[in-house]
Length: 388
Image 1 (cartoon, one colour):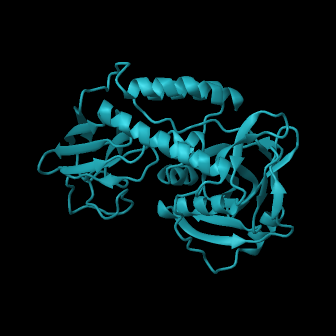
Image 2 (tube, one colour; image 1 turned 135 degrees about the vertical axis):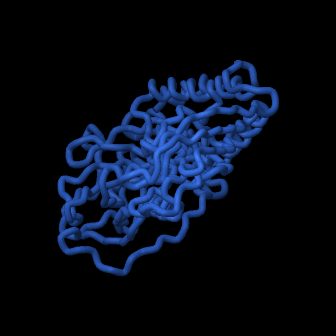
Image 3 (tube, helix red, strand yellow; image 1 turned 60 degrees about the vertical axis):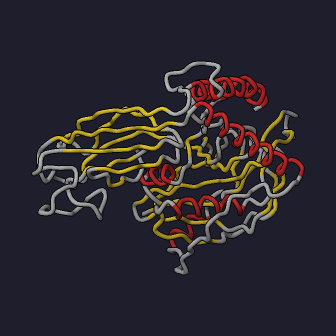
């Protein structure tokens, strides 16, 4: 972590240079740039990868045409079973902004605003069999942020990061300003078998030296594909696995006027093995000082044939000294229940949750310290999330 923070200074300089036009890039412009692209989308395949990378703030003007009998508005006399966009006509032109993102209807034309980094895929609203055979001619006009606008955004991001850092380090204002939507909690009791399995879970994770750390505070039930799609839709990003990779990725993304959102996450252990996935959620730049993040492990049991994922989530709010070695590490919000609620609220807002329940296991964790020596507290409950 110490090396990461030192390297960040170099990355920050690269960010400022790119954003202020000091280093020319393929996507730089004087005021605003409109990039036009043309694609042929066949109805014979569900998705066409355009190869077009998307950044926060992009606005896409998408227009399409095709044969009258097989056009981008779709057809009315075809099966509606299993359509990616249920309320759109079969055969209509659709799109998604991430590989696992939720598809949206395009039809003959649509303006699409990009609110998170992604990748454009164009497709056809079909179930098992296309309702017609043909090709759509699609034009995409992408309006990107100007270099001057990008510099203004960077200033706002740095200002936000400074405020968050001050809140976390010195108790100035609120360290967690993001509003979490109220969770819709089911009153139905958990299945007895599932309760028994959760009762047998370790209560806390540990580091490589077996020091106990963060508490297990949520469980997700669903396939790997369901979970990854849900987290993608909720704007969680997979964390980088090493500091060196992080510095390289940050340098490349800032050079291309992108936002770096995958800061490294340390390895922790549950079931005697490292996390299967690490996810984080934060504003660009501000994530250096503050980020929502968690680790996921596949449980050694299933429920009703479904995969069970066990998670430990915390909210970074600043920096502190690592009690183990004196190095610099992230400081967490001691109210870890707030991160549990943020994870549930983000998935709920993304529309990927079937139901959620609280469960209080025996011997709950209510006051403890993580592996770096920071104290935290909780009501001891786990949030159990069932995916759609």
